[in-house]
Length: 320
Ligand SMILES: [Zn+2]
Image: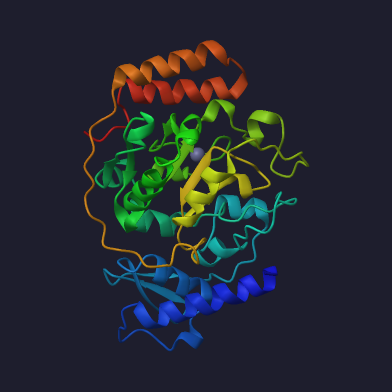
């Protein structure tokens, strides 16, 4: 299928589902007058986003947020501030690979919107973290993820599927999820802070800032990826986007973003149920990080691992 046909398919599908399954409220206008992005948010987060009116998206608690503030921002400005509309600045298209210059679909996250959905403080986010029983057949450890908007359930479905492929063990064993931190080199909160992102096998993945430590946002870089594409395919089928589709490649990174990646997800979100799994074994984790430190000592990467290591060992980011 051509990308135009795919785009049309997405549009038709989202329009159909948004119109047929989203709650009809007095505030809702006909689908024709609702921007596609707003329709997607209504379909992807039905427990939170219930309508749209007069350039405002309407939340289930009755509060409203401006959809399009009318400002035309540059890329640099969008990294500092975004409105809701700019979430959809670029279409997440699996046919665009390797990612061309500047193509980072899903990397522009409206902090106000995701803060409203998942929490604006570490404490707010932490209240909704649950343990997902991450790849138990592969011998992996449970990981923390938010139960909001069906995220933990989606990750559990990914895990159940990954568990069925013994050959994928080496790609899923070491996982990092919740971490209240900013994105490296930026002031913005990382999606790991919302408990919607998981990094797999960091020590043999590629991140543009590790490959090119001195590169700025506008630098021209060569794309690197050696990640297992079967793993990518499974994640994408369950509402996740992959950092390997970005020009600013981050191939270990998977992020729950059903509004960006909806056809495969089917855009039906279920009411989240609490998932119970046992807690990770701190001894095993310590052993892993010690091994990583011994084997891979270089640059910012080491700093990053050290931060994650301490936050894990001393449980500074754990919701007990
Ligand atoms: Zn990540």
